[in-house]
Image 1: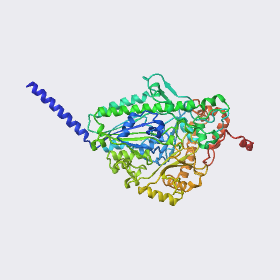
Image 2: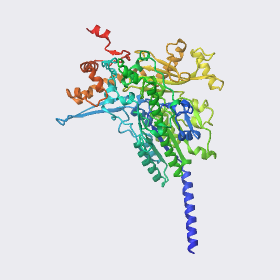
Image 3: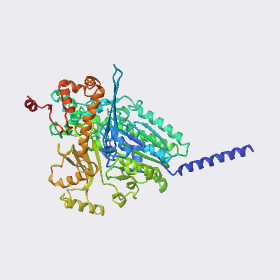
Image 4: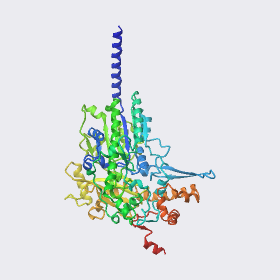
Length: 635
């Protein structure tokens, strides 16, 4: 009898467990794991990149059963603004909020507060308002019954980041003095971002990014707890890994074959675009030109290769983190009901154009990788895996909001559908995996837009990416009629060679010329085609399309006024003479640059902030400022 009861209990347990497991796999809504790493150039995950120099077994596994987006872009390539656009689904110029500045006098205890209405997320100090309640995770929890976990780097709310970030962004049009012959010029960043050799920790036991691993383990434990409930879960982890400074350990460093690494070529400093020249200087990527030892060290090809090697090692370690999440999902039996979305907030120039870091309109900075793997697809088709789908249509981070809503089967009535600027990527993933020119996919815009206005740049910039008929095609002269004709042929499935074209506009478009790049044939964007008359109709078309999304001359002027007003508010709340000490305090990244000519720096700042009208000034290309000719005129 006892044996029979034990057998019956065991049978019931097996039956109950099977039923529970079956119920879980029948959930209407899938689990979603969103992993966002830092500073990853979108090209680095592509198969074949630099002879597959980076081992990415886990990302390759997700690709094989999923979707790899090879023309994906950040809508504003810096941390907080990029994440604000991702979590809201809105362009950077469509995120209004209130900027609040306060300062407490340590002597008197008096606190001063200033507030300013801001139209967009212009720099790393600006982000979503504190009371914003329509983020992706909030909607999923409130309207779709998701259990949500938000861990790691969040960084989407206004008012964060350091004092240096906001001060350097606001003073973008201040003509600070500098001398690149004897100093590093007006540098806004510390030396470990661009000017050192990176760090390789000894051995393999200690990660240079242990905080990310700790957060990962905590989040995995949370997932295991959710597996006891019937609710789907949404997991987000923002990793700090891949963000400069460049750090790794020997284990991952040794996985990168240095002989496969392509060393970016650097044109002479005088041949750089003026805005590239300024960004290189602002990032500390120009050594004192009269210091032969400093020049030899900085311009060493070995150093460029080594920085890239460490950068790729960090990406390899991130792949291991992705693998840990994949294994955790398998361990809790949720693989067939989980969607992985893996991407980055922005890229990193990784020594291209004599720069590191982001903020630039070049693809290394503004393109980001994206892989989406839906475990339900293989389950529903009855296949273990399916061939990966590569999507080369331009897509953008703001597309993730509506994509996640559609994948989670959230009704348009339950989230701000009409307020979103992004478009769901689901049609690109479900159209039989082949025809990206179908009616369903043609309805979404065939271009993407990005912009930036913060620190480490000397002017607001705006860009548009669009695949267009190649002008090198024998039947295409570049005029509007031929472009339209070639596009009709492309959509009707006849053979038409398409090129990914990028137009970059600075300021209002009149202070300095546009840039135009054929990214398909010039992936490192070394040849500006804007002066080629053959491309004039294409540039006109792209510029008109860019304006259909963002009235960039108006936005650029808006940002210039915002910069000036924000700086005035900071001076007022900090107090005079306190602000004069605070702006030159040790620890600010530009303190060394300020020391070159303290009197001249204060004069440039006060001349700019007291100017009656906010002006947009062109990027400077002078090695010395003020240049001798300007000094002679002033004297």
